[in-house]
Length: 158
Image 1 (cartoon, one colour):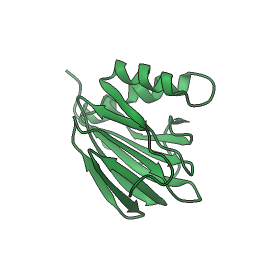
Image 2 (cartoon, helix red, strand yellow):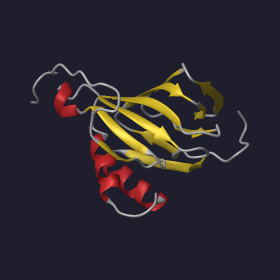
Image 3 (cartoon, helix red, strand yellow):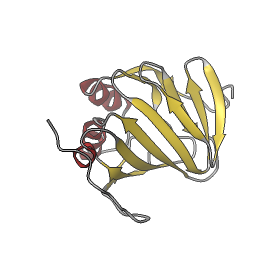
């Protein structure tokens, strides 16, 4: 059994930063070992046009708060836009994807409950080279994340 949560205070830009799977840096704000397994929190920069393929988490709910920029989300069969200040929740088992539809990088706070997705991001960052869909799929399957479709395309229905 893991220890309970520990207090965390991180300022802007603080935390371990690694290369994220959506083309920009990802900074860990809270890892499972710090939260007693309750959650993982990351700040993620998403390059214009970038985003992950449509995927499903078997064991985690995922939350986003858009800090800067505008993202387009697909959640199940629904599409919506989320400008800065938007909050999005996707329960486990629901197919989803997002894409930065702005001309500048977007910044988002992403929270997974419970924790566990750290392994995916750590392994993805350790692999050398540009983002690779096959690597996303194989590393995702190791943590209970299944890719079920391609990334959102430019101009896809909002």
